[in-house]
Length: 108
Image 1 (cartoon, one colour):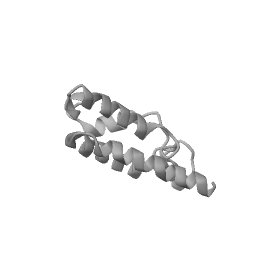
Image 2 (spheres, one colour):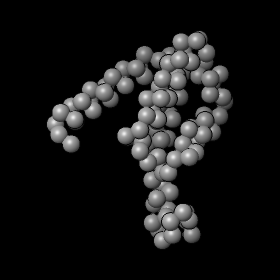
Image 3 (cartoon, one colour):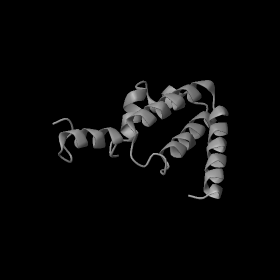
Image 4 (cartoon, helix red, strand yellow):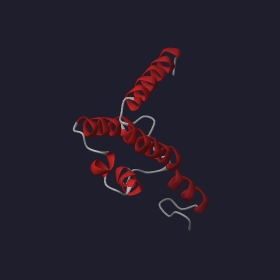
């Protein structure tokens, strides 16, 4: 990764943050909580993927229609977030597999 890639990545991240700040306050709060959860759970490919930008697009569309964020995603924010990554492998799973010694067998 060269210096130009790093600079471009920072530029894109700052633009992403500006879009978040443009959302209504309730959307910002929920987005940041989901983002924090994803950073903690660590879906593999989060940094390279489109999960967060797609979520932001979805929230911008919902805000544009005048819906509240909970109208859009439901009352259970955690269930919504889990649904977004249900088919994704997570770093937490990889860690569990590493300590169990068996791929696909968390905590054993």
